[in-house]
Length: 312
Ligand code: MN
Image 1 (cartoon, rainbow, N blue to C red):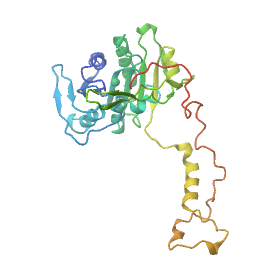
Image 2: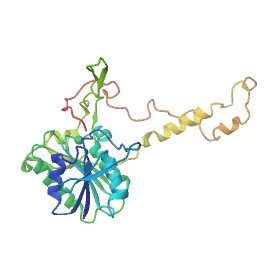
Image 3: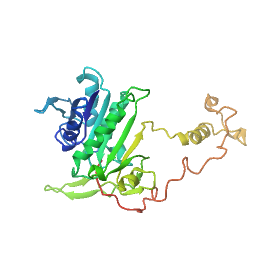
Image 4: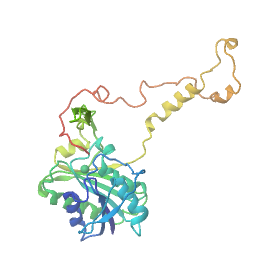
C-alpha cells in the first residue's frame, strides 16, 4: 500500500511525525507537507508564486505552500504513481462541523479525493498532542482496516476522523456521525500596531450549536473516535425544485399581462418566456428553500455548550 501523507500544521508537527512512525511499517509512506503552519487554508492553491520542494533530513519533503498545494503537486508531478490512499494529519485540534469547510487538514485530504483517490483526514480533538501515540495507533488501525479491498473498490471516498486525547483503552468505539454545526465565529479582534495602523485578527471559531445526538460534536464529547464520510458536491439538492420554479418565475414574469396593450412587447421577449407547462408561481413555494435551520443558526443566538475555541 502506497500512502501520501500530508497535513496543515507543517512537516515538523508532532502529529505528522507520529502518524508516519505508526504507518511506515505497514505501508510505503511519502510525506509531502507544508513548510509552515497552514491551518484554515481549506483547499487553497497557490497560483501567483512558485512552489519549491525541499527534503528534510528525515526524508520528509516540505513545500512553501498550502496543504492542497502539497497534495496537488505530489499527484501531478512528484510521485511516480498515484498513491492508494491520501492521509492528512494528525491535526492539532478538532475538525468537526463547519471546521471541515475551513480546515487545511481536510483540504489536503479533499485534494486527493478530487483526484479520485480515497482520503482520510485525522485530527485529535484537543490541542496539545496529549496521547498522540494512542491517536496514531488508532489511525493506523483504521487505515489497515480499510486497506483490504476498499481502496480501489468503486468511487473514491473521503473520511473525516476525530480522535479523543485519551489513552487508547479509554477511548470509546469508532462511531460514524454526521457533521454538527457551529455558531458564527467570535467577533474580529482589533489592535493598533506601533505605527498607528489598525490590525484585525480573525476571531475564534464559534461554539457548537448543533451538537445533538448523531453529530460529531456529541459523540466526541462522549469519548468516541468519530468518523464522518464527506462529500464535495455543494449543490443544495433539497432546494433544486424550489429554485427551478423561482428561476422560471423570475425569467418569465409575463404571464398573460392583465392589460396586454399596456405591456410593450420587446423583440425577442418570447425567448425568455417559460414553457407553457411551467407554473407562473411556485405551486407551493416553501418560505425557505430548506428545512428550517435550528433556532440560533440564523439568529446567531448563543446556546448550547461552548466548544473549546480552536482553528481548524
Ligand atoms: Mn492544523
